[in-house]
Amino acid sequence: MPGEEQDRVPALELVGLVKRFGGRPDGRPVVDGVDLVVPAGAVLGLVGPNGAGKTTTLSMATGLLRPDGGTVRVLGHDVWADPRRGPVAAKRLLGVLPDGLRLFDRLSGRELVRTTALLHGLPRATAEERTQQLLDALGLADAAEGVVVDYSAGMTKKVALACALVHAPRLLVLDEPFEAVDPLSARAIRELLDGFVAGGGTVVLSSHVMELVERLCDRVAVVADGRVLAAGALDDVRRGRTLEERFVELAGAGGAPGGAAPGGGLPWLRSS
Ligand SMILES: Nc1ncnc2c1ncn2[C@@H]1O[C@H](COP(=O)(O)OP(=O)(O)OP(=O)(O)O)[C@@H](O)[C@H]1O
Image 1 (cartoon, rainbow, N blue to C red):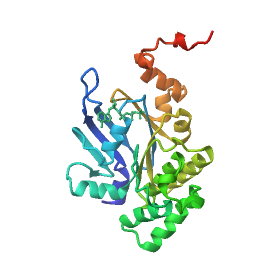
Image 2 (tube, rainbow, N blue to C red):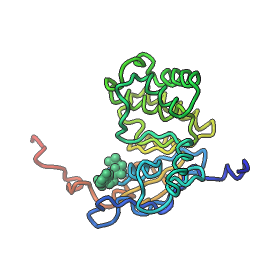
Image 3 (cartoon, rainbow, N blue to C red):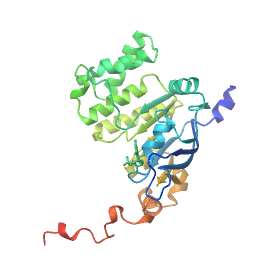
């Protein structure tokens, strides 16, 4: 593909994605026709209420969960069209931090990142070097020889992120990358992501922290009930408000979650 044409190919393109599982109470699929285009070089934040379908969408986008309908293209490669070649081509280009990831947690952090690099086909010396650099960058060097099963939640998240980065992907898809991560580590992750994007990479991340999405992302997609309510450049979606205000306006239209009376709270929780 000529360079200029390649530049115009979106890093990620979701068209009419559908996943049913058991369906929603109203009978609609849990992911109900999601369209999303992420241009190369963008940092897109995927936000939405609990149960909106973010993880399900990202799982289908990264070849982990087969869609019931629609297509996924990663840098032009159809992830699901050809069950053998599509995912293989896309997986080389993709770095994924899935939700609830199960790691080979009897390995040490160093062994885990190095093994991931070797499984991607990197030469041993490169695998060693990149592993050390990632462990240093993520503040895991002191814990490198400890087994991952003994890691804290934040350390586990960081070592999983190192695994997602070690083969130098072109598109990073990160489900809640900052969950359980301390502020120092969050800064280190932001710096890593900045460098990744400056080098031509693209990032899609989900988060519930609106300030973080505003600080990190130049594009945002708001999903609720399995549908995209708004997507585009951050400023276009915000319309002069904070992302949180806009989120509440878009996704909060159905009232307070769980049926609690808005503003009324739970009277039995009051001590006086
Ligand atoms: N394996 C599954 N089987 C059945 N239903 C599922 C499964 N995974 C997710 N769901 C349902 O699909 C809907 C969307 O879930 P999903 O995890 O994608 O939401 P989310 O936006 O990532 O939520 P959160 O912000 O809470 O992580 C929910 O109603 C959930 O119960």
